[in-house]
Image: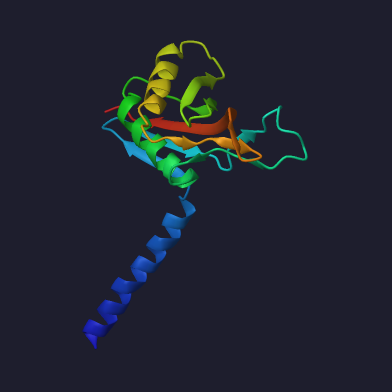
Length: 163
């Protein structure tokens, strides 16, 4: 009977862990010895319709190989690897602007807003995005590949602890 009671208590603790995990969906965490780093990559992305594509045309937006969730995972993986959390304490919303050409390559990359003393952080963030090697399926207007632009909202929260 004691074993059954112990097993029931043990199993019930895992059911609460699932609820916590569901609450954290969309957030990515990375920890170092001093900093706790969180990036919320907002979905859906902002896709800009090409001006040359008329309202009567069929427009299909650019797609990352594996979908938006795969891009989020790749983006966070490279942000964690190349944005130095020991140097930067970043809090706030940034926008990642990317142009996807007809071949599915990222051609123009910009991060806004430009804030004081953020050149190093913005350089590292751009470098992290450039390291993503998978291609995009380009946007199509009437089944013809066209250049397009995407804006991704990134919300950074860093908590620092003095040791």
